[in-house]
Each structure stands twice: as C-alpha cells, then as structure tokens.
Image (tube, rainbow, N blue to C red; front, side):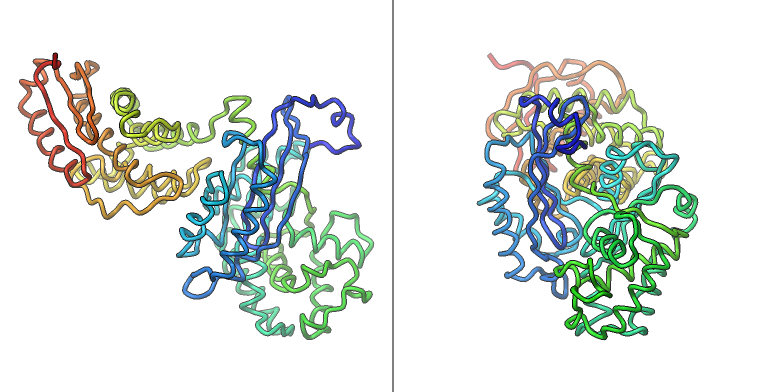
Length: 517
C-alpha cells in the first residue's frame, strides 16, 4: 500500500484498474477505493460513516428500525461514491452484527432498492482470514505475524508466517457489546473491569495452545479500538505512535476508574489526552478485551496497523480479477483432499451438471457466474461424507459443509453449497431451503435439480454420458438417452424417483427415447 509521499504514487498509471470495498462493521461502515498495478495498491478514497449497528441490536437479536434506517442512509451515501464502478470491481462484506441479527434480511432487502451491489455476510473466521491477508500484504515478511482486531461486536484473531494464516478465530466480544454489558450506565469501577477481563479471558482460554507460539513474534492490532488506544498511549507515555504495552494499559484502566463514569471523561485532561471523543464512550469494553487477549495469549506489546478487513478484501478481489487467483477453488480442492473424495467421479458429475446447466441456463435464468460456481462446488464435494457413513453420506456432506471453515466463501455461498450437497440424494424437503438475499431460493432449487440428475447419470461411475439431447420448456426438462441407458432398469427407476422429487420443487422431468423432429 503506497502513500502520496512514496515514489510508487507518481509511478502508478492513471488507467490502472480500480477496485472498491465496503466493510459494514458493527460500529462504522468503511469504504475504500484504490488502483492496483503490479500488486501495488494506491488508495484513492477512504470514507467512514458511524452507524453503530451493534448499539441497535436489541434482544433477542433484532435490529431496531432506527438502526436499519441509519444503515440504509449510509448505504445511499456509499452508492453515490461508487457510481461508475461495475459489480466486478466492488465487494461489500458485512460482519458480526449482521451475522447474528435475526432480521438482517430486512436490511439486506431494503438495501437492494438503493444500493446496486450485493452485500455478503461473511463468517468470523473468514473475517479473520481477510484481516490477516490485508496486514500481510502491507507489512514486511516477518518471521511470524499475530493479528488482533477488536470490533464493535466481535474480536478476530489470526496468526501465521506468510501471506495466509495458519490459525484463525472469532469470538463474540466487542468494544460496544462489552461496554454495554459490563459498564451499564457508564459506571467505571475496579470490580467491573475485573469482571469484564475475566469474562474475556475465559472466552480465550481454549485458544492458548494455538496462539501463544506466535506471541513472541510481531503482534499487530487493527481497527478503531486499537488505533484509539495506540493514540492514547502515544500521548500519555510518549510511545512510538503505533505501540501499546500491557503495563501501560493497566495505567489507562486506573485513569478510567478514577473518572468513575464514561460521561465525565475529559479528553482534554492530561490523563485522557490523545483519546478521541467518539471512542471514549466505548473504550472501556475495548481496553478490557485487549488486556484479556494480551494476558491470556502471552502478548506483551501490540503494534497498531492501518490495514484491516477492507484492505484484505480489496487485495483478494484484485488478485482474483487481475491474477486469476481463486481462493474458493483452493478451499474446494483442500476439502476434497482432506476427506478423500473420489475426484474422478466428482469431475464426471461436475461435467454432466455443467452440460445440463448450459442447456437450461437461458430458460431458467441461471446465466450468472455464481450459479455455475455453486453447481460446480456441490458436484465436486457431494461425496465429502462418503467415508463417514455410506448410507447417510448426504447428511454428513451437508453437515460438514455447513460447519467447516471455508476460506473465501461468504455465508450464503457456503449455506447454498451445503444444502445442495445435503439433498443430492433421497427425499427433498423444500422447507429446508431458506430465503437467500444474494440469489433467489428458486434458483438454488433449480441447481439442485441439475445436480441430482448429474449424479443419477453417473451412478455407474463410468466415463460415457447417457445423454443424447436436452431441451427445456419453462420448468419442464426433456432428456433423450442412449438405447443402453433406456434399457437400464435401475437408471429408469432412479429417474422415476427423481420425477417425484422434482415435482415438489415445481419442476417436471420427461425422458424421451429419441430426439424430437
């Protein structure tokens, strides 16, 4: 990442490809646009809108109308700043608050009317991976990296020694949620700080073995809470601008306790000089979490870093478009290897499924790249549960894909892939397919029809396709088969079963003996 003072700034071609990312965080929405040239990023625009979604999340996990309105207004402003960008140049990700909000679909559907780009809800692990990627791309190749990101509703941890992390974690504790829970009414006492730190340490206790080996290397902190604390430490203790020491955090807590209440914190007083006004109201929860992370995982010093989630998203987007790096395909290949999937059979099913898709995509409105990818992923991994239990392999496939960590996937992509794999055989339950916001549920059901047919046509695990012709009329699919296939009683019985299942989804299947004139 270059700055205006760097030589690379003036060397960057004006026609270099531009990309943009929008991070819908629990506290603020962050927009970043940049040019890329030869792997170098030149930021063009940074825009931040304080939305405080997490503060608008009321029990039991419902976003208030006021919070939704704040988000919609912020998205309108971002849409204006993104005019001229194509969907391929923009990626929008939503994090903790929209992950847990039970009515997030209301916000996402309302956003469609005023915001022209899809909003992807990503998992905490994916968020941690992308944060790591952003820091890794903007720092020297240290012997190891340990990254801490304290957001409004969650804390992400990631550690590794190269561009990709070796371990990631996400914990549901953030500066807003912890401040509201442990410092209700704004009261600041030793007892409240002790309780909040102990609670956070308990959340982190099981992660000691994984993260402590990285604590002796370079530890970076990202996002608003850590930047605010580094600024406070710099002013209070004359630190280097990016450094936070654990012992200094204890002194900051003492100052907060002496203030007794958040409402009387005076940022102009010597004790609080360097602390930003907008951060003062949520700093108690943030500092408690950072102390807990440093104590529990053996960290003595943290270095604040400018890069975070949005930089990681932007670098990955640019890599996919400009360098053809496909994180999602790498994930699929890794899972296939881990679970000993028969890759030859998976490839046969994939080829047949894509042949069917090619025939119906116009009529069934499945022309987008996302549908081809969803179908391919499900075809390649549908046998992932094969070696756990043969008769229930579809159930195990769905469970594994629903709950495993899938780098590069947003929540709906993972959910759709899991559901396709879960129902690749046996009876279909249409009620199990929830409403999606990135694509219509009816389209996912159409992909299921194609996947199941592809699997049926490859049950003999041979290389010869039995299909001689495919035609479609509305929701009716007509397939012509070879004479050998038509004489296969088992195949014909399988297709009769599929006809009944497809009827539940509103589709019809017809098998004809020869190509119609």
